[in-house]
Image (cartoon, rainbow, N blue to C red):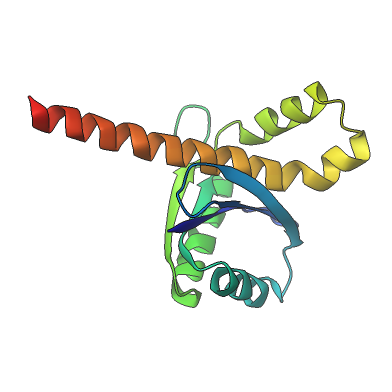
Length: 146
């Protein structure tokens, strides 16, 4: 199974992908959010045998939905109708901050940070999604054993 992470933005959309065993999320690329985006995403889903697309949901710090989250929810609904893959959303709070800090720690230039920020945010969100899914599965298994 392969997962594709999507960091949706009005101008740019960052993508990250997992390995087939869902162990590691890796930054993939950043695409422009234009009229050709859906067609390009369909190609990526098909070429990488993506089963699930995880769209980062930009919730407010208190967990509520704001205007950006509502736009993202509409975008995720549109993807569900267009792609041959399941589409789900997952909390992406602070992933852009994490991506920026990580790149600063690795002394990546301002120009490269700007180019990679969205795909790195998608990577952090997707890795967090996979880790949460594994923790839930582990908790479910532990509860069944009791």
